[in-house]
Amino acid sequence: MANSCDSDTVKQGLSGQVIWVEGNQMPGIIDDTAPSPSPSPERPQPRGIEREVHIYALTKTSQAQANGVFYSNLQTELVKTVRTNEEGNFTVALPQGSYSVFVQEEEGLFANLMDGEGNINPVTVSKDSLSTLTIEVNYKAAY
Image (tube, rainbow, N blue to C red; front, top):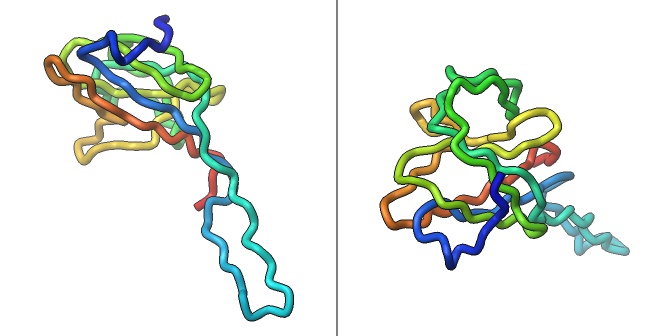
C-alpha cells in the first residue's frame, strides 16, 4: 500500500480528498418573529478523514456485489491502494486509463456515485495529467 504522496512529485495520476459527512445536514430556519428566537441547530461540519482508498480498473455494478453504497467481491483488478493523510488528502501515480475509486469502511468498499453506464465512482486519468476527485463518505448523513 502506498502512502499519500506530494502532488508536486506526481505528474500523472489522481489527487483528491476523502471527506466525512454525518448527522442532520438539512438547513435550519430561524424564526425572527418568535419572542426569543432560537438559533438553528449546529450541523456537523464535513471534515477530511484518514482512510484507505482502493483504486480498481473501471468497475460496472454488474462486476461487484452491492449492499447499498458498500461493495464487495469486485471482479476487476485492484490497481493501487493509498492511505490518505489526516486531512483526507491523497495523491497517487497511475497510468493513463479509467478507474473506479472506493473508500474502505468497516461495512465494505464505499462508493456513492455512478455514471449513466453503470460504472461505479469512475475517474479518468489522462496522459501527463493529474485528475482530481473529492469523495464524500456520507452514509451516516441525513439530507
